[in-house]
Length: 450
Image (cartoon, rainbow, N blue to C red; front, side, top):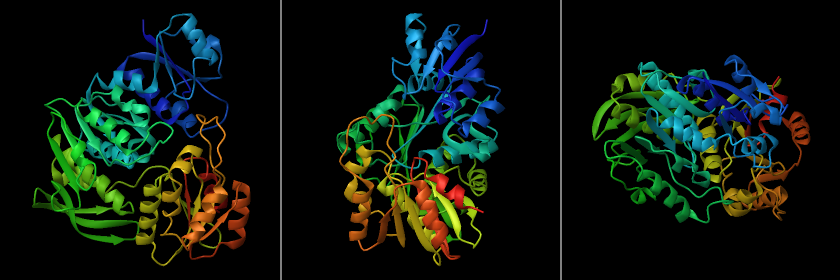
């Protein structure tokens, strides 16, 4: 009789991805429950023929295993009922670790760039015929969604450092795109963050491999028993890009492998950061045996992921509307840099919705200095996380004032409706509107696209 696995909070990006692949890996019957609100994952789950129920304790009564989102506690009615019935319960990272152990695991970690790098690697490996299983934190058209149930030996998983969740995994291959201070509601300082990545690196076996960004100031802390390959733009990097030319919505470059020229790459996603993501992809895919020519060809076909410099369209007078998930100062800075390189003639209007009070408070000065690439900044009210209950003194208005002090035109407009109204009245044909944030700021862009 097939195993019955029930997912509590199945509409989450990660949870919906696990639900899709567990049917094959575990040979299981899948059910799930969530709120009535509509998410992009609704269509994904419908396509996978996975039923989504309203929350009720009855949902878990025939389950052999309950997998729960980190958003819910033991007081949730379904989780409480599973505990009463002694049904095994695993959190998302615990269950992902269990699935990863059944194949040759590849963990894509790092403060920034995880989703795009995982998506790039997934496309290259799929086109090379390796048919990996993939779990990624966004909708990726090139792999058909946010998950792929592959029949191959590799399992490619985006792996988050928050609360040291990724220590549930023991990957054969580990990519660390970069290490910076983030998640201040959990990590105390950068040393705390680095220690988490160091601990993960030590879990990679001697026959495995670790890939790190050559220019990362914390690279030397990443030590383990597995060999290390570096990627980046510096001459010391094992895999590097030279003679980079930025062009509309992309770049071209020459790729060097340990000082030897191996081919040209045409990349159709904007920004220097995406070159680094591509180099990480080349490093991993070359190590697992894919010919360099095939890797470069596949990367040239990569068109990005949802909410990563995603072109939403234009409004009636020709202003370009782009959306990006950037919610950390470094991500904002690199996204604006990419926008400026791709659209040097346009007026860049950044519409930023800070994500979580704790991050905004802890990184306030860094946020205030992250918008140098914008011509104008509009700051919306802070999007609070479900984790944040306590009272905070920081406000979006404070951030807008600090950005203004940096010599950048900045204003606070709290609600999405008011921002839409302001943009509708002021948009010009030469504008590039860039919505930034991990909350629901993308709705502004969708509403003003004609």
